[in-house]
Image 1 (cartoon, rainbow, N blue to C red):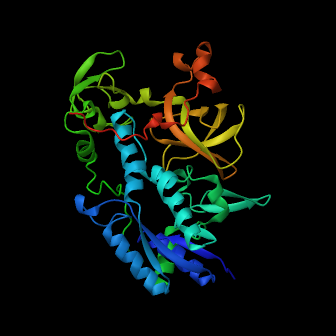
Image 2 (spheres, helix red, strand yellow):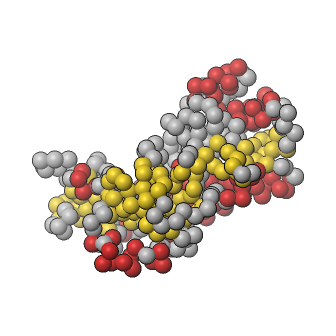
Image 3 (spheres, one colour):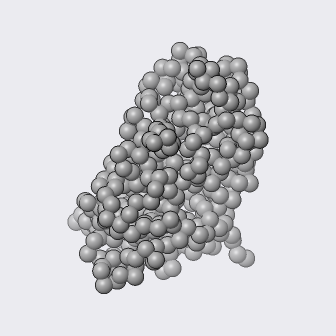
Length: 396
């Protein structure tokens, strides 16, 4: 029987509802907590996001059903500074961020630990599909039992010290089993649809969010040229922030093969397009690293996941510091996208991760041995604020 006092993050979805229920059934003393992350009245679109008003209502109903206290914590300022500001500045810089990674890394888990400490809780819990395993009496973050639902890709940035206090009760289950458990417990969230949109972009209008913070006259939202790899112009776009590496939609036509976004050049407002073959990359550099296990060493073989839902592919560490790393992939991967995450694994354990800073074919000049400075550990980008933690504000 569990006797811990645990603060459970309850978003109002079925996963966190069942996580809380399992802990209650195991004998833990449980308090539910929902984080209010932004001002809902300023948003249009569906109200069923993981952090929306409906989520708060459903979390409260589940807590009542489980006979546990429920609290709502206002983290709007932290969320705006840590997540929305990063989202805006990364798109303005021509990169494609992952707000859920940012939220977990800088807002959700840090605030939960702080609240847990103030309440005298022993630990925290969430409804993520991931597991905590212990090796040599040390806690590590591990892949979920169901690889299709695994969410470790979004968790690489949490503080390592959190792992010793973190409970992940549904990491051994698949989604149908979680829903069945919720039905048996008569939880209102049992058949609630999953939310896939970004919580503060419920209508999926990314450009609308950027206009709100940057203004219509920001270069990221201004027209610019489509260009081919050789620099020849082939059309005009309505703002490079509307595009991401690997995108097919909205590009010039009339070519014998499909075109894809290969690169975004914000300084020139250029969107580079080309055939699918131009997307393949064999090396990448990641910055802003966070480590949940001992740092790998140059020459080490690891697995890497470069986007959510993608397979973990073999790679070799070329350089590694506390701030970043460089990898060579065993097989070229398409659309290794700046701003997305590269998460490293070994034997099912998350070693750590970083934000993709650059990617290139192995024979590219910028990654060649002659350009050794770009490949040395000393040249890896640091984890300071340069990777987009600043809010980009409109200038008048």
